[in-house]
Image (tube, rainbow, N blue to C red):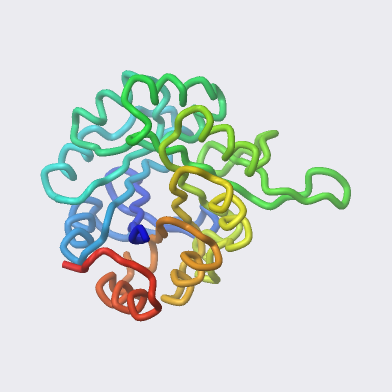
Length: 258
C-alpha cells in the first residue's frame, strides 16, 4: 500500500505566512521560508506555497520566494497563485519548484491544463479545486467550484470538474472545502471520498484539520492520498512527528519521520 503524505500549506501574502477561517480574517503565522525549513526538518513529506492574493490583485507569482525555498528545504514543494501560462510555469520550475498548482486560470481556460501537461508532464501539474456547498436552485444544494481565492462561484460542479481536470492531464488534485477551511472541525469526508474514490490520480484533502483523528478519518473514510493543513502546524497545535507516530499506530502507512 502506498504511504500517505502529510503536507503543511503555507498561504503567503507579501512574503509572510497567513491563515484565516473560511478564506477570510487573515492573521500572520510567520516567515514563509523559515516555516518551510522547520516542517522539512520535522518530517513533512511535501510543502505547498500558495500566493493567496496573486489572482485577486492581478500580480505575478513569487519567484524570489520560490528561489529561497528551493535553497532552504530538501523536500518537494508545490507553488500556486496567479499562474496562467506556460511562461509562468517554466519560470517557477526553473526557480526550483517541484510542482505547480493552477486554479482560477484553469477554470477560465480548461485547455491550459492540457497545454501544461503536454509541456511539462502531468507529474508536476496540480489542479487546485476550491469548493463550497451552496444553494444553486430553490431547495437544491451542490458542491460548486469557486475561483479567485474562493471569492467567485462558477457554474462548475465539483465532481464533474474533478473528472475533467484528470481527463485533461492533471497529475494531482488539491481539494479544499471552503465550508470546513480553518474551522478545525474535520475534513469534508463525504466529498473527499466521492472524488478520491473515482479519481485515477492522487487527491490531497484540505480544509478542516483540527485533531490527529481528523487525519485518520480523511485517510480512511475520505480515501485521500495526502492531507494538507495549515494553522494547526503554524501555531504549534499538532507536531508532525507525533502526528505520524499516531497515524502509524492506527495502521495507516506513513513515510518514516526524520
